[in-house]
Image (cartoon, rainbow, N blue to C red):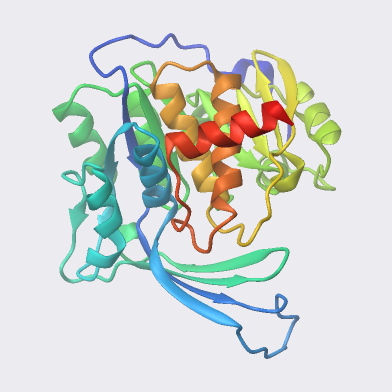
Amino acid sequence: MLFPPTTAPHHRLQQGPGSGRLLVVGSVNLDLGYTVPHLPHHGETIHTTGRFQAGGGKGANQALAARRLGADVTLLASVGRDAEHALADLAAAGVDLGAVIRHEDAATGTAVLLIGPDDNCIVVDAGANDLLQPEHVRALAADIPPPAVVVTNHEVPAPVVEATLRAYTGRARVLLNPSPARALRPELLALVDVLVLNERELSDLLALDPVPATPDAVAAVLKRSGLGDTLVTLGSGGVVVLEQGTTTHMPAFRVDAIDTVGAGDAFLGALAASLAGGAALRSAAVRASAAAAIAVTAHGARGAELTPDAVDAILQHEAAA
């Protein structure tokens, strides 16, 4: 399905005291990762070559990336009795966790990651993430002034995503990462200021077959989609940006990739941080691509040394090449 042009966001952002601040409404997980020689085939049993345990969840990963890159970040999430390990590095980095809902009778969400040489797959148990409610969003929106940017994703219940879009449309710049892919009504999509997704999620959103696999194919889809501002990440293929009807392809930065888990979250967190700081969309996308490049050089969703200086170094190296 292709959405008509009338679904493109048309609301005007009200500038206010939230300039520079960032709110992430999303998930918190405990990640258990296994490196494998290849992703298993149907019915196949294989041995791991290594393992790790770390904090994860798209919301937490995005919040941490944004904070490490200098944004003033608040996280709204729902966790269980075993969340301290998952939240420790966020607390240490200075992410505001005052809005996190804690459930002593539930377990924090978990994710099992299989990491192959060229790809990965993830199995998620939502756990306490499913206990986040629209009322939590509305209460926070009523309690504090709107931030400059709000980020949400599909690792929290659909009613929470809808409540976030409705609470902040026109009051903040709203970014949606519709991952994992699920149906999204056109009237809700119209409330999104910037859509950030990969080519498979784009295909799911627009019911495309086959999946557009090249920058040119993605750009062609975006031009006729009727979507508002959209960024489609293509891994080593870079990112295609649709802004006000014009598409731009930005190649990926060249690095020696070790682990692609968390690259998308680093991209989204860096993008949101730059936008909250007043950067234009394409400029923010360049810094986000550099952050994603740094993310793939370390194991785990949060393992990379993601700092403003590291991003600047990538950009300077590429400019000098």
